[in-house]
Image 1: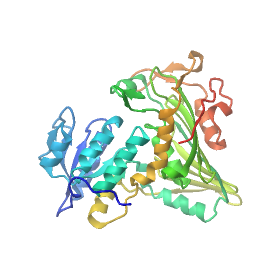
Image 2: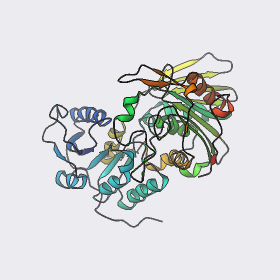
Image 3: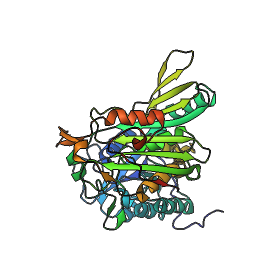
Image 4: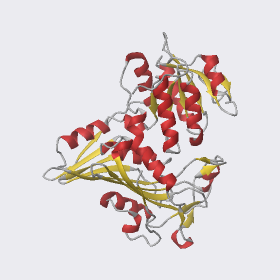
Length: 397
């Protein structure tokens, strides 16, 4: 059934660079500013406005001309006539601001995670469908040419029958990281869901990429999610966690991650098969194929920028790389984390302080090897001998 269309008709691109509004110009928004400079030099986009509670300085807007600024996204979209908006705002604001854009027929690049709950995700997808706008979700790893390349390898039987997908991420975040914003490290704020945990925000790409490589990107692909959520830091959300997702087809995907690594490294996804495995270091677009009877083969791949892909979709009809439907399974995981028991504090004997980038940080000894083991065996922390770990239950979305 086609949803009833509401609000303004989708805005159509005119001649020349497409006018874009950026909502959230600081933090990760600085990356989007740099990307918009690149797209402006290429003649593809023009930064028409920035929506932020505090106006950006001339230094932050260096390289742009006549950029309007306002804390009111709706007013800014009206005054600039922007065709597209990049939403890089706190997680719990996404649904409201997405509706502000869709009501005006403005196309969207919505940063990950798209929402803090499955209900909010459905509100966004319903608004997108009803308005007819295009929406891209900002999982940049899914713009890598490595993703279809790995899918082709698997489909061609390069590693035999797929037995499971694992992902591991060992990162470090110091205590200042959790002081950067009122919502940082929170599960909820002023009664609103935030769910700013390690698997749902900093290492969300590991979850989304693992699901995509397993061919389980849609919400109805997920049958069961098991969660084990822990925290070494004095925060509300989790910083050391794992999930195991079972699909409707029976494939298991385990993702283990921490922000308390001993030696931070590159996160990766591994697709295991009966005759080999494919490892994908998704931030580097690097793939390693290992299979019986052959030497290891490593390849590098290009990546398509997701805002550039959205602009190409609007001007030439190029298919979107990460439409909302492709992230439904990820949102099932977010929902499972949201509904799970509160993260368990690790005992003081399970962590120690170490130097961080801007402040001290907490380190969990042995965690680097543990997340690797979970990714390799598809096991959870409690099944792989961590003394502080215990099963915290399962959620069936």
